[in-house]
Length: 382
Image: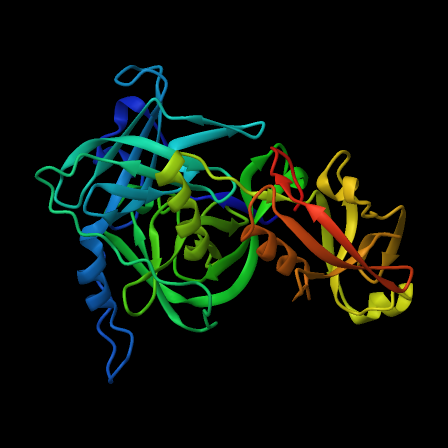
C-alpha cells in the first residue's frame, strides 16, 4: 500500500542534539557532492550547493515541557528568506494537526550549518499550504537569504536539488528532476484523508526526500527556490523517488499574509469536483466535454446559497465511481476551467467576500451564476 507521509523526524525531547537524530542508522554518514555538469548553461550542483546551503537550516520543535523527559520533538528543515531573520518551514514541522486544529510547538530552535542554534518565534502557520513563518534574532548571524523564484512555468525534466537535514544529517543535498507538475497533495486542514483540503499545483520530484527534509527548499539550476519539500509517497515509510513540494507561488502568498497578520485567509465555494473528460461527458449527455464536474455541495456553503447542484446518483464508469446529476463549472470570471485543479487554482487567487461569476452547465444548457465567496472552514472541498 502506497501512502503519502510528511517528511519530518520524530525524536524524544531529551535527545534533540544533532547527533541523536542518526542513532541506529547503519548507513555511511560520508556523502560526496555531485560533480559539476559540463557544458555552458548545464546544471552545476556544486555551484548551487555553494550558493544556497549556507541559508538552509535545521528546525527543531519541542512539544510539551522543554528539557523534560515528557516532551517530544520534531526535526525538519527550513531556509532563510530575509536578513531580518525570517525563516520558512513546513507547518507540520512546528505544529501537530489534530482534527483539523494545528497545535503549535512549545519551543522552536533554528540550527545553522556553522553550529549556531537560536530560539525562534512562530510568526504564523498556514495549515492550508503547510507553510510556517519563523522569526529569529539576526544579531551576530551571517544570514544568507535564498531567492524565491516562480512555480508558474515549470518544465518536467528540469533539474532540481533538494536541500535540508534528512534524518538529522544537516547540510545534505540530493539532485534529480521535476517528475511532474500540478499534483494535488493533502493539506493539514481536515479531519480525514477524504475530508481534507488539497494543496494544488504541487511539484513532484525524484530528488531524494526523506524524513527530516520537510520544510527545506527545492531549488532550480539557478539556485532559486521553486518549492518547499513536504511529503513523500512511500510503501515502506522511506523515500522511494516520489517526493512532493509545495509550489513557491503558494508559499509566497502564505508568507505575505503570515508576515502581515499571522494567519492566511482562503476563499471558499463549498464543492467537491472531479475532472470531466469527453468519454464521460458523452455518456452523460452533458453538452460540454471539459470542466469541474461537481460531486457534492456542502450544506450552507456559498455554492449551496447560489443554487449550485451536486450529484444525486452513483455511476460506475470504467474504473471509477462518480456522483452524477451535478453541475459542470466551465468558467470563473471568464477564465476557462478545464480540469478540477483549474477551479482550485482560480479560487486560491481570490479572497473571501469577493463576488464571482460562474458559467455552469446543467441539463445540457449553459447558465451564469453569481456567487459570493466565503472563508474556508476546517473541512474538505474547494
